[in-house]
Image (cartoon, rainbow, N blue to C red; front, side, top):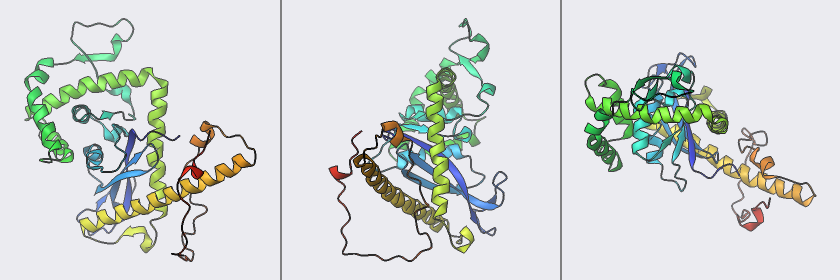
Length: 314
């Protein structure tokens, strides 16, 4: 009722680290020194993958990497992000990898729309278009583009490393220019869909809101030691973020079980529930959790079986 697991939203949030650290950078927007935990959260609210990256890193570099490294049962083919999670090169690479990039773009009206050719004119939306596509450039490098994609699939290079190179050598690299030209095509088509379909804009906003809500939920479990990642080892930093991710996912799972039991109890009491009612609930609940309390683990107690008894019939 929350989604089919076909889409994922990616976004980053700052975690504090010590100033004397190779990864530590001052983040202007968040304020203070730290690094960025970059999460991929599925439409089912569960977090699929996490990176820990420097604050100055362009987040779009990692938007595809999380999907390609994801080994879970959920294998989304659509990724949402914010303005930082998009560019023409990212649109092109995601298209060639079979991933649909659908970001929430701020100030989209300042982006250039591209015509199929300079001769094409449109009756009602012609003023949107400022330039045309160089199809010859794409055609000449089409085999090179696919060679790069095959290298990513076979593990010869990561998508993050490729996007980083394409950004650094843009003026000299003809391959970058081909990626950029293809990305202009894909992004123009997406922008036309985005401005003409209110339901699509609503869907993208809802997806990105989920990952932003997940940031606060996961950080709620990150306490003690002044909430600072107190290590200078980059691998240990990554582990700390992933373990925090694991704890958050475990609580999400328990919250779903508890919510299901409560909703079934309401049904037994005669309350009518609709799918929309359930879909509006969120598993990011913390009020009932004893974060600082005493815990007793009864290893003899067998939990309820997750079978048809926990299925909601709506």
